[in-house]
Length: 168
Image 1 (cartoon, helix red, strand yellow):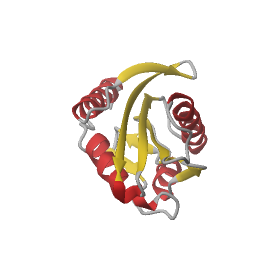
Image 2 (image 1 turned 90 degrees about the vertical axis):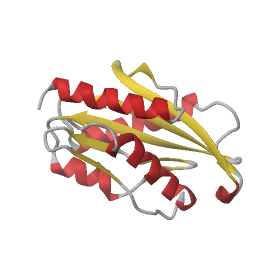
Image 3 (image 1 turned 180 degrees about the vertical axis):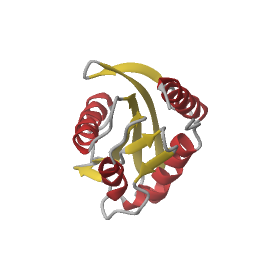
Image 4 (image 1 turned 180 degrees about the horizontal axis):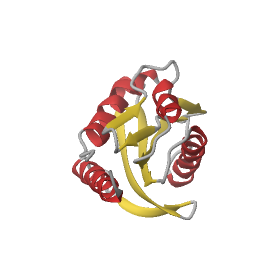
């Protein structure tokens, strides 16, 4: 697989985000180009809260556990700084999909992404690891204790944005 398959995948994710009203755009995070999509949804069944969902995707040379951990932390900080509106925890929450795409993926990094949701107060992330060599997309698809009300919504969005995208 090549850089072309990685670009193709990111282009496909960009189209999926646009089709779902996320207004994708390219930005910088830590000096590197990232694809950013954002949407906000309100549901009464979420205890009348609004969930701000950020998707931040980047191509990297290799995905390891330290790389995905660091990227997840930076994406959560980015989401917090760019949310606007009411403070988190006051009828509003923030979820993020930190997405890393590469043709070199450490299996431990894939397992880390699939293991669990990563939480901070009123913020949480579901890291996504995309292995273009093996055409595999990994992310947590369970129901955690924190943020359980949003679980099916997030799994649906992850399937739409990442599994429906062209992995090469």
